[in-house]
Length: 489
Ligand SMILES: *Cc1c(COP(=O)(O)O)cnc(C)c1O
Image 1 (cartoon, rainbow, N blue to C red):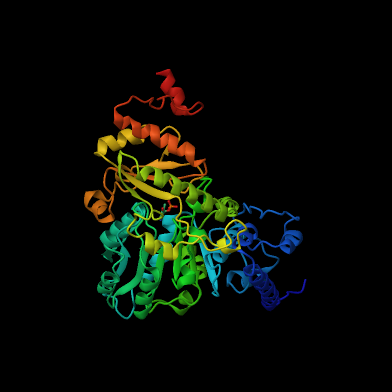
Image 2: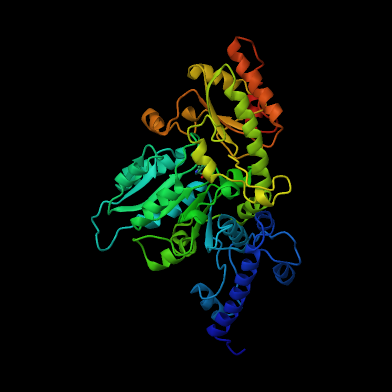
């Protein structure tokens, strides 16, 4: 057989890439829900390559085979679209990443791309590490980054221990993220990026993103936003000018809770005075094909598809769960055993007005029910029990419908005490900075009817009246090895 030549495949690859690009620009004209449902998977692709399967197939395969050596060469030099090896890329990953990139870029005239990872923490490391490389021109420079101190507990550890302690990279903490002068005072010529979580988990910190972006870009520094709590249904930082968005896809994006996954979504041609041009041109694709190829944190095809499947109903779920959370927050706010409720949706919240500038239910103006823009504030809230740590535990232990777990974003309501769970590693001092007292219970409201959740909270809080309640049975679930051994003892 005559060799076809590398160029034959390169030309075919160009035609395929062009077709995909056109399909995606057509998809971009659709509304949010349509994009969430269809993503980048087309009827043509289904019929030509996937036996007509209307759902994106899960390609449980480690690698892709090639027709001949020319195709292999073209593919492995990244000259044609390929998925070569699933540590780097895989069709199921592409379907998820394509949909995610479109949702985060929704409503803005920008090009976005996505690299999906095995967890939210892997997404954060993948996003920040390329900016924390040694500058060959200044090899002894002590690098720093400026980030809010109200961040997820795992992020606090990654920044405080893995970067600062282990690598001598300074984390300049912004204590009051709502003070733009504080951000400005922390930036110098060794600052590599700006990082913020909004709304923050669990304390609902919120900052004026547009001002922070303006400030960072005036210094030629990128802005990275952890937008896990808002999801693209309520906030799309890239559309406002941010450079990179982090999603712990584990959370609200995949509310069914079947696994852990994350995503880095970036705008093309981001702002950064540091780093190679190819990194700035298309950050997410760059990390996918280079650093993440070498470090190996990318998502598995199975988790990519579970995530994609969950995301299709994102907008309506976030709307419903936000409305329920508002009702529950109002109930708690007037309760005699509660001293404070932190929910951005409440007018009593000091950041309510600012949050209302940013958090809008996507496409509410095209919704039959609303027909105009409406604010929604998500399903994460927290409340302070009037009392000490022990009384807080008593209320927590009294919950019978709301799950006690260190989780959020679920279709099932989940509560935790951050001081003894998600934020226990950072110590008293770190918790003080992040505003997490020991009488704080974080509640993430699920898809149940809110009245049933209120009833559960009501009976749990009534334990502080001195009334007796039934505690959960100490029996362990059937079937598990632990339950069998417990019974045998
Ligand atoms: C959970 C969480 C993360 C980490 O994500 P994982 O998927 O658990 O690794 C990061 N940021 C926020 C805001 C989170 O809630």
